[in-house]
Image (tube, rainbow, N blue to C red; front, side, top):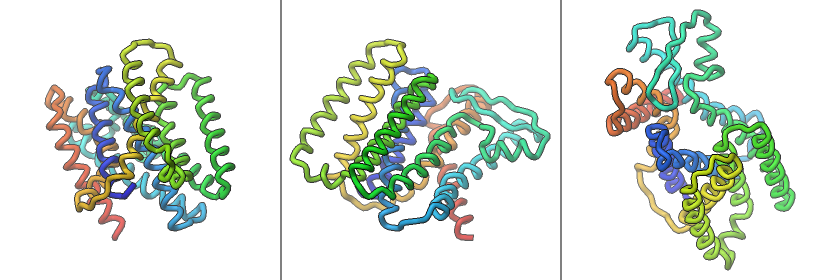
Length: 316
C-alpha cells in the first residue's frame, strides 16, 4: 500500500466516523464508525511497523515522536475549543463537555488551574471520542515492542496471544462490544505487516479476496438480525471489520497513483476526527438543528487551519 492510498483511506475513515456520530441513532449508518476505527487501527499498526523498518528508534525516541504526533493536535484542538465556547456562551470560568450525539454541550464551572490543565491534556475528557487517542498510544507501544521480535513464528504467537488476552478481559468486564471489534484492526495490521510478502505472492490471494467479499456479505446479512446479545454483536462485528480490512489491503496492492491532495487529506484526517463532534455540537446548539453540509464543511476548513497551525508550530 502506498502512502497516497493510505492517506485517502484515513480521510474516508474520518468522514465515516463523522457520519457515524451525526447519525448515531441510525442502525444503518452507525456501524460505519466502528468499521472506520478498525481500519484506522489497521493502518496505524501496519504503517508504524513499516516506518520502524526504515528508522529503528529506541523507546524514548519512539515515544517522543508518537506523543508529539498524537497529543500536540489534541492539545491544540482542546485549547481552541475551550476559547471558542467561552466566547460563544460568555462563560469564562467554564469547560465545555460535548455529547457524542452532537446535540448537547454541558458547561462545567472550573476554578482550579490544575483542573483546566487536566481538561486540556484530556485527563478529563471534553468529549468521549478521545478514547481512541489513548488506546492508539498503547497500540504504538505494542507495535514498537513486537517489532523487536525477529522470528515470524514467535511474532505471530505474541501478537495473537496478546490480542486474545485483551479481548478476553474486555469480554469479561463487558466493555461495549465495539471496543472488541475496533482493535481487530491492530491484529490484522501487525500480521499483514509481518507476512505481507507471503500474502502478496501466494497463489491463494484470489481466494482471500473472494473469502473476504463472502464474509462481508454474510456479516451484513447477520446485521439485519437484530439480536441484542453481547456475543452476537461481537462475532458479527469481527466478521464485518475483518472482511473490510482485508479488502482495504487487497485493493491497496493494485492502486498506485500520485496526487498533491493526498498529503492534505491524510494530514487533516486526525483533525477531522478530533473536531467533528465539537463543531457539530456548537452549530446544533447555536442554530437549533443539525445541518450535515454546514457541519462537515466547517469541520474540513477548521481541520485544515489547525493542521497549518500545527505545521507552523513544529517549524518554529
